[in-house]
Image 1 (spheres, rainbow, N blue to C red):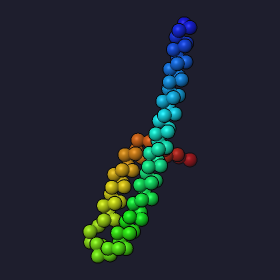
Image 2 (cartoon, rainbow, N blue to C red):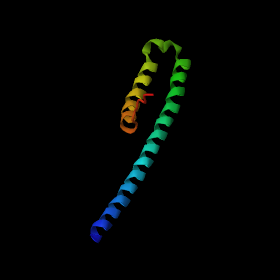
Image 3 (cartoon, helix red, strand yellow):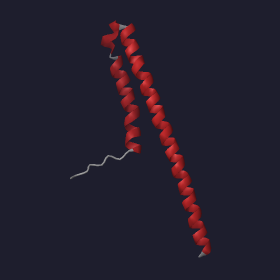
Image 4 (cartoon, rainbow, N blue to C red):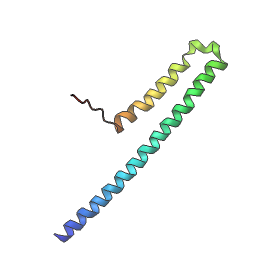
Amino acid sequence: MENYQKKAEQNLVELQKQKEQANKMKRKLEILWGVIAIILCPVHLAINYFYPENQGTYIGWVILIIGALLFVPYFLKYYKVEIKLK
């Protein structure tokens, strides 16, 4: 019985370490998404400013689609959407 209790405590400690590691990874990904957004917005504006004739190339839409493709799987993996009814 004592071995079982020690093993259970070890498992709890290991699970806590894994949870902390997952939280650190989540935070790094959130920072990465922020950096990508901060970089892509000025890039899009600069392209439109310096090359106004490229309005027909839809570069803004391409950047938007790339951002959505990167963000949606991340959002679905790490966040729960809950509907609260009154």
